[in-house]
Image 1 (cartoon, rainbow, N blue to C red):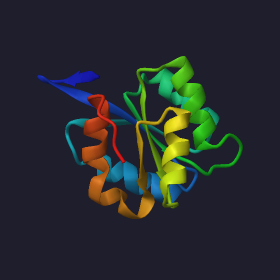
Image 2 (cartoon, rainbow, N blue to C red):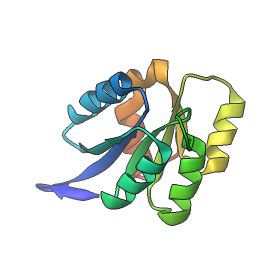
Image 3 (tube, rainbow, N blue to C red):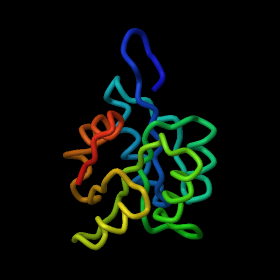
Image 4 (cartoon, rainbow, N blue to C red):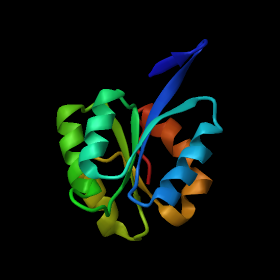
Length: 133
């Protein structure tokens, strides 16, 4: 984690191919001074590249994207940089998606409809190594 003053800042990468959702999530996250959004990616490969470039602590990863999906990107990123935590974002519900996210190496998942209620807490928790969802 980077340091901003005396407290560590959590470096977060937002990944979603829907620009409006990604921008809204970024704007919501930057309101918390403990979080620094280091970038926004719109594909799985771009997510991996930016997470490595900016040494992201936490990646907010959409599942369904063109090209490489978020689950495959999570697997590849965690293989290269296991210290990066991943929160999978999805509109889907159910245990199957939770299990798939965990198998891919995610620390948990959030439903897009409930993201605004839980996102900051989720980022802070996974950055400390605590799983969510």
